[in-house]
Length: 195
Image 1 (cartoon, rainbow, N blue to C red):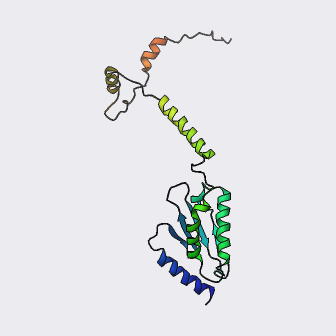
Image 2 (cartoon, rainbow, N blue to C red):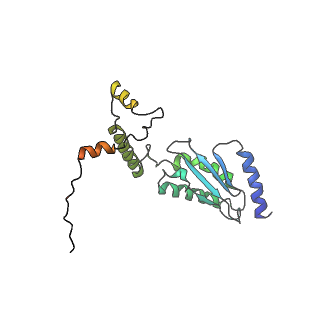
């Protein structure tokens, strides 16, 4: 059988075995992911196995660089990858994806033994919290002016039904304005007489 036929057979087997398993995901026809641990727990991680063109005559690519694994440090990621690749060496030439997923299930507690029990706070978390505190203080400092009933009534009397002020509310009465400023004094200049 060619590598392509072996891959197709293994793909069918994987899909039938993991049918309905929420931890299993077929990312592409040659990439499979399996989630270990309880979803949302700090000690859970996602293992991704990708087949090359010559798989199963060569080891698959093992990746721990999924976004789901952002909480893991590089040492844990490398240890899991190295452990899976070492196990894959003995299965070269035969279907091994299911075997590798099950191997990690068995060794799960050993692989995550060095993980701390609590989540380490990242610097981005503290930055987000600082900005949230600033936003909260801004919201608290902006208070709406408290008006009495008479003040509110007076404001509503100044506007129409839509809440707009009537046309011309800020116009200046020209005649009144000119009467307040008084007449403009003109200085008469003697006209030059020509002889």
